[in-house]
Amino acid sequence: MNQKAALAWEDAQGNLFLMLHSGTLTQAELGKIAGSMEELGEPMPEYRLGWTPSQDREMTLSAVLPSYVRSIGGMPDFIRFAYARQPLAAPKGTPETVTVQGMPAQLWLGDPKEAGAAVTSSASGKAAELPTEKTWSTLLWTDPGTGICFRIRGNKLPKEAMLRMANSIVKT
Image (cartoon, rainbow, N blue to C red; front, side):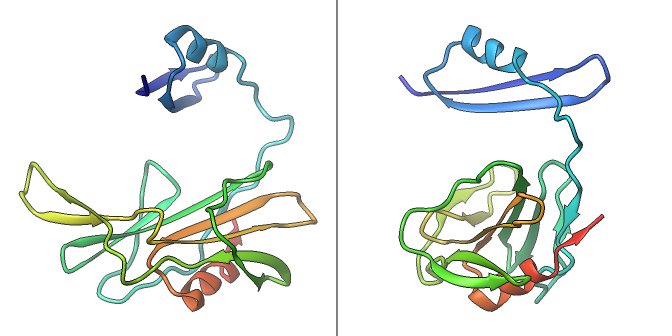
């Protein structure tokens, strides 16, 4: 049976970790994975998006994940920005090849006409639309100089906005 689990812990240096899992692993198996975590030999550089779309309101940075949320007409719009030293997950389908900061990249556009997953807030009673695999636009590329893989996902965002965000990335 598929189950959802979250495991949070703090190491001796005070670093906090959170591992989310949806699958069939046991608590002991999750603990073994957590126990095998090692610090990277060299710290990852920190990057941020220098530009995000702002129409009705500015995007606000989420304190929990490297993501941005914009509210337009009561419905949230999401942007997720991730980078790692290993390949990041790509969506299904055939991407368009584009260029980001002089590097080849793959772009999958979300369908702006597709409805997202409808949810209703129990606190406010307001309905919202959450992204689905059909509505996410995804841009993925690897910097050959650093070996770092970058991924930007935006709910129903057009090609121009995705490329502008990618070209605005700054090292902090």
